[in-house]
Image 1 (cartoon, one colour):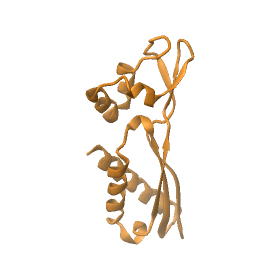
Image 2 (spheres, rainbow, N blue to C red):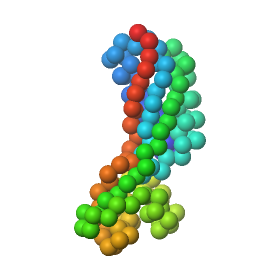
Image 3 (cartoon, one colour):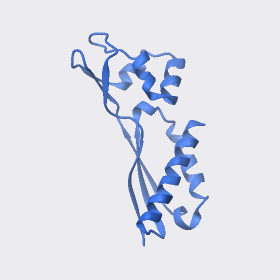
Image 4 (cartoon, rainbow, N blue to C red):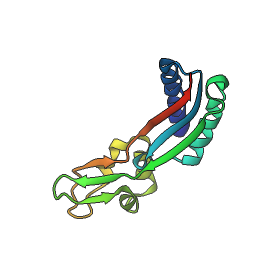
Amino acid sequence: MHEWALAESVIRTVEKLALDEGLKKVTKITIMLGELQQIDSDIFKYAMEELKKTNPQLLGDAKLDFNVEKAILRCRICGYEWGFDTALDELDEAERESIHFLPELAHTFVKCPNCGSPDFELKTGRGVTIQTIEGLK
């Protein structure tokens, strides 16, 4: 599952960063989930909790904090800005699934609701980002 692969990448990155910072125990991990990824947050959170168990001394007690960043798109032609949630209403299941696995495909399926152009930029809301790692040295 896509969410499990993302969770595994986050855990491995946290382990490396904790090692680089000399942390003996991670107490809190704050993660930003970009709306464009359309991550199933329940599956992702479950995967994170399970994967923490692979390194119980370092990660076992770490509190997980998740934030979702709304995806805002801006048309490069007319300057109109809109939320990805608006674009989702116009997409079928296969198109949503395609964007879930490869967010760059949004340009194939999403058009500016103001002028119809597929030429837009993503201002916010892409990817999975580790915002903070807190721990004990």
